[in-house]
Length: 235
Image (cartoon, rainbow, N blue to C red; front, side, top):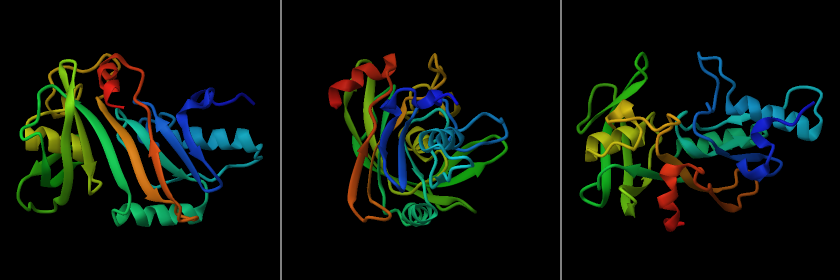
């Protein structure tokens, strides 16, 4: 049995214990399977565990949260049902602090603040629309942001989403600030990046371990891509 390609080098694995597997997901990889039939992160993780622990059958992998396919960064997977149940509760109750880094083409004004919108998902087009006032079945979405500085001809924006809604950061930056994320043509950026990713990275997660209750902070290095090189000064 060959070692899974995703973890041929261990740089993608940020942490592993009996209950958690924390991955720095590359852009372009699904977290869970969808109608495309493409192999997702969850399947690759299961294969990795089967290989590592020489399991004759399926290994348990639970998905408690997702980040969009063109987004890179931290994904926490559960290796036990106990961890999955508690992670689900923590994400639902917003007890996990999430930090994202985004590159925008122009500087957000003001350079720091709080955004609140009501988001409505269009499942057919796979897009989300943001409204500044309560709207029908829209879900309330809140985030804080601050501009860390200029990165080449782009601006590095730190975003802390308080809620976790589909496409939340993407649509709120584009609608609320008029600053779509670099490469995100779905929400108004003019041109895609060469690898069709978008310049949004799940940089850090802070949480209490779902089983041991230890306070943990995970940080994901930026992708080794040209559009992120100028942001390395802010490490």
